[in-house]
Image (cartoon, rainbow, N blue to C red; front, side, top):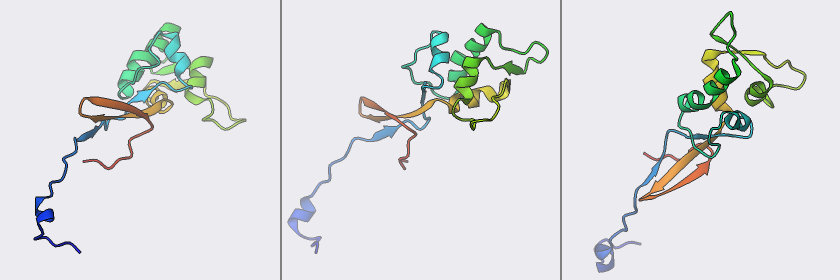
Length: 140
């Protein structure tokens, strides 16, 4: 039983916790699937990339350009070389199924990012910690 008029109750002051901020954007890091693509263009495999555009613009489009993988007759189609095909589809396609040889340019970024490892950053005060996986907290 709590006696709200008791001196101990009236003198109680709760500790204010420092606010925890969770990065809601969901940063991505190179996974084992896409790491060879990062390495081939000299990109930092330890960096966190925020969003599809940064990872695809900084890395996979450089790889496409370096390997000249744009289909000559249709610039919106990209030809998949073995390394890029493995990065995008190895382990995601059922055994016995045929691997694709081309991908539409508009699907490249989302497919590439889906093969990366999701991370989130938790910040308390001036300290930040990176955790693998998407943020499942319910913070507002």
